[in-house]
Image 1 (cartoon, helix red, strand yellow):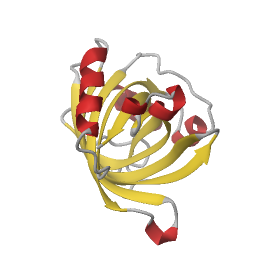
Image 2 (cartoon, helix red, strand yellow):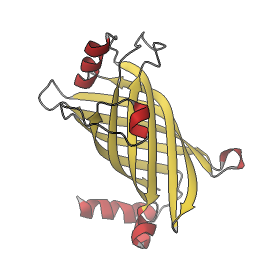
Image 3 (cartoon, helix red, strand yellow):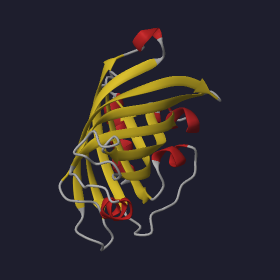
Image 4 (tube, one colour):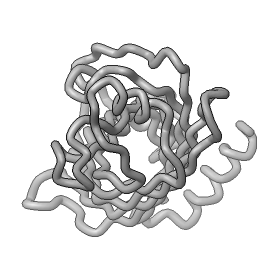
Amino acid sequence: MIKTLLFLTIFTSLFAQNDYDLRVAYGRADSHDLAYIAVGDMAPDSAKGRVLMLDGGYKMIENAFKLPLDIYVQGGFAKFLENGYGADVYENTLYVKGYYNFDFWQNKVRLGAAEGASYTYGTLYVEKLESQKKGGNLSHYLNYLELSLDCDLGKLVKYEPLKDLYLGFVIKHRSGVFGLINNVVHGGSNYEAVYLEKKF
């Protein structure tokens, strides 16, 4: 796996335009709300649900509003591992994501935020629990948000072939936006994950 990732990193760098990205991530379900997770108050869900994600995107705007802000359109595929509490669930996402770039400790750091749509082909166990606790509705289609923070792994380890390969942390959030989508007032789910994302 590591040899394959290294090969793809070096191969794609030969044709680098930095207009595209590809991300792989692995994470876990969290029982806390998005706001708590964003400030570091995490609580792994008791069902120990996991998620595998693959996302790709295209940079639409570089330095938007004359700021170090890049805007991407992204699409993703995820598999939620339900740990025996039900059948595994698949998801598709489509979203717009902005990355605010800044230098920190001689490294390039990106703060990301995204919004879009999420559709699951089944009902997540954590969303069923949330619905039961708070009396909310369930929906396959929900609003999608994510927050991320990453840094350039190549600069971190000072290895040029890994330049533009980012190591990061992401919070993945599905919700009905307080009832605006499919009348889901209380519901949705939160996952946190670590990822590698390559620009090429």
